Length: 246
Image 1: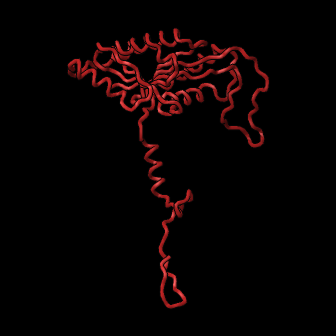
Image 2: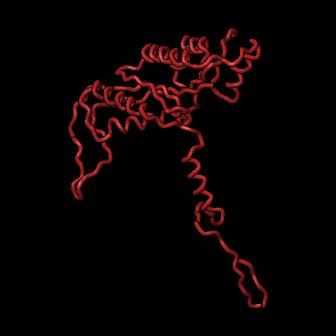
């Protein structure tokens, strides 16, 4: 099953973007304190976590008409590139497969009776525009199951992470003058990212490092305090001649 994520980043304004840089001691880089508000830009993003490939489009307006038209074109291309299903399920089995992905979700919708084979899962946030009936029916007709993240669950959408990386690489330390310039920088950064993409994996190397670090710590008395050295039992003599293990 192919899993893709979608989100919109921004708005990005024509203002200074502070960033880390190398400067001589006592001579920090100074940001402009005056700038002209010359429009904003947003970045439409479609992300494939297993491969790290990202598809983007910079826009100055992100209405449903703009977003849906771009998404439908990109998703249709992706679905066409997917391998054909290994076997065709019976209609009732296919319906159960689609419904299984709605189990435990707070945001659900009524599935059409006639469904094609399920080809892709699309993770999105729960904006109203993402749940437009015409758009949802188009997704289902192309074998795409939309999954909406709950409120406060944006971290479940990996597109948020890759957007932060693209924004940092494209804008930090710069002062764009126009919205078109912001779009150019963001799209060019995405092209560079796709030349050597980084796959995003749940419980990957970073989670394994955190787990190893956690195992090296020893909690103290049930509190939030920890120590890197395990506690050792000490035998303390008492005045009555007995011993006490502490």
